[in-house]
Image 1 (spheres, rainbow, N blue to C red):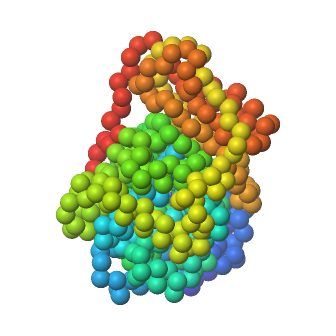
Image 2 (image 1 turned 90 degrees about the vertical axis):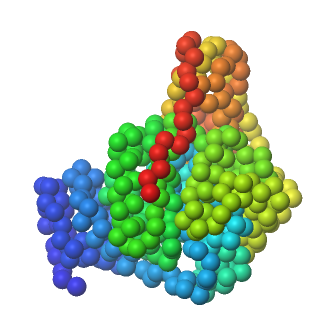
Length: 433
Ligand code: URA
């Protein structure tokens, strides 16, 4: 590999230059092998954040990240291999429901996910709130698990997507997440390592998304669909509204609890709508008939929940949570936030909600921060709902009194209540195939 001077490359991007493939390969490979320190790579990420990368650079960046580790070879699996990924939201626990649900429909789901990022939650952190759950499996073990139950849920590792593992953690704490080329490269490098036939992307827009503006979310969706098609897999992007937390619960173990409820047929309407829409797209890519009816049937029969139990068991998590949900670490102390006036909920500041979870201990401010899996919120009202003065809007779960006090004070400001009725938003805006 040709060598370059990292300082010169940072300067080049800072001044609006375009990287060659060789320069990008050098940067990604050197950072992954720890030959470029975090402080230089942080500066590089910030330069990319401000100056952007065109489609060609983004593709080289994604490929270099993909090639930093090994890709799975799942040719021994004869089922369709389809996965989903979200660009990140608040209360977005759809992966926890969809992966076992689609596996119960006969699809192989080799899901590689991430940790919480910025104000958004991460599938790995949620799963790790189940005592003992392992998200770092050997390739041998994950192949065996895929053969036996058709689903794994793992994280980036020193073997698979190692560049994304490092860059993702660094972006989380350097305010460089919300960049179209960086999100596209991060997501697609993980997904293309999975040896997939098809991928469904949940691209969020709204005040809780990394791309709040619809136009930018659509640009992100188009970029990833194009990268996927060029790599020879079928990709669908569903643009979904993230102007309110998805479902009722936000917080790691609370979201696992809500996902189990959803697999028992008791999921809230908005959560199930997004889950079923993405699930239908996954079935369509897999050429499996039945659509939403099949998904509902697998939940009603208990088959989807059974696959989730097997997944938890195979990945060494505490399966007794399915008999006693209180085995999950759920904070004992609860605080209620009530409406200070009557009226219609016009807006929920979803970004702030996500940041308040971080403040409560449910996310990270530094890469080394430990997460408190037990804390979180329950949102009882959504935009468009009518509330009376004194009605409970949010319940806060936290065993840390001091943090809870500060967060409760700020949470009062996330709801905007007006006298005029406000129509409910459409959750699914567009599907790009
Ligand atoms: N999800 C990812 O995997 N990467 C991002 O950059 C954002 C969301």
